[in-house]
Length: 256
Ligand code: ADE
Ligand code: ZN
Ligand code: ZN
Image (cartoon, rainbow, N blue to C red; front, top):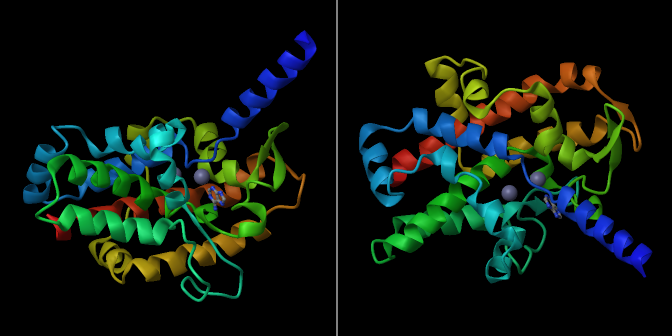
């Protein structure tokens, strides 16, 4: 009996340890980059709506509520899966929603003059989070392996999976705090920043999706990964974090 109990506890612990999300640091970096690109008016309006909380502080709220059954409906809002060879929208959308529908819904409610302050703040916090997820290539993934969650690999000799590698393993290995990382992202010129924020949500989905394909092709099942993988891929993590932040700021500056 006691043996069974221990097995159960280990299983629960594994499930918690494997809960998929762009790690906390990644989401905070996206919030911090966005914060630095808000115009004065937007800063003021957001400070009022969030009672002075920073975007970095609220960036993980959408993950924090995952374990609360009252917020179950928001679970599928963190990602979208569709087959290679298709574009987003060519497949019948999930009845439970996906990250694209989620971002559009957040924008609609923040815009809505009739919506309560509580609702607008709630959906703003979700938007900050989902714009981060949208730039994690495995959140625009393939259904059959749950966005890489079922692709087991080894990271510095510890078991992980392709999804978690891109959510958090690489970022955690880099060892910077979110503020350090936010000030050490790729430096783009004004023209480059303008190009990054141009286009619409579906263009950004397509762009992430091109990266998703490369990420799937970057590992073999069970492969032992370490320094070489960091060297080959961490610049891409850094540019995705910067793009996520710039595009979040673009949406917010337009909204407020
Ligand atoms: N669950 C199923 N697919 C997923 C994905 N692409 N990202 C995160 N969680 C998932
Ligand atoms: Zn994730
Ligand atoms: Zn998420």
